[in-house]
Length: 307
View 1 (cartoon, helix red, strand yellow):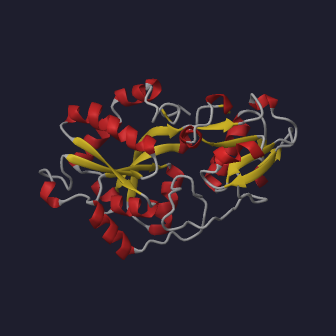
View 2: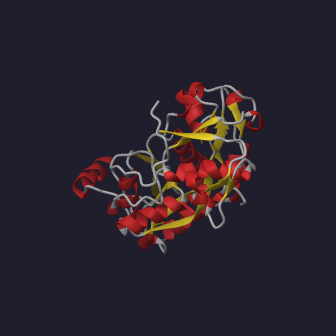
View 3: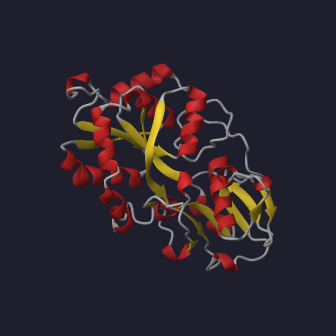
């Protein structure tokens, strides 16, 4: 386990990183993209081809949607849309796994893929600010379930005074975890703090004397024995086989952190993008997320929160 004494305020955004939605939207670190390498990768993985387009559209009837390669839940979600919703609209959806968020977004901006589904709005805004790629969010499509896990205590209220709590070590997820504790009434923020951008230094009161340690993305399951609690994405613990009973607090995630359907801004008026919107925002989709028993989705991707 790698821990640091404080949350990094300005983490480096690394080419090839798979922690897309989890990196700091407030980071001033440069998003570096090797254009030649990306071009090679995109050619190798396919992408939109003019030969397969439909009349009046840049895209064909096979709507290729990029997602983060290590997310089985995002893949399962796209497969559900392809088998259940897309046929009603006369198209297919092909999930395209891409291991680097920079490639994902550039390929969406230039129309190689019709859309991607790997980021919340704060990360998207940071990408656009730093790269000037033309990208637009069409709306939230799901929540990544985010909870408190503990191998030592049975509930959030049972955490002892001075409990050591592990948080993911990037600003976006630090903020999400602190906001969870604030909404649970365990800490308060200083006046004027935006909760989706909160840092440990923004805490005004901490009555239980929580001590925070910071871990790498994905380290939550193996960290459980060493701390009182970990706050992170459910899918990490489920993939690692952590017992359901170790999940001790599971509030609905704020809508601010919902995964967005993102398209290239140049294609907002494209007729196939209009079809895509009807698929993703079909009322059946949110009902499915609320009731699914698919182990790749249940308790990992949730319906979009109302607040």
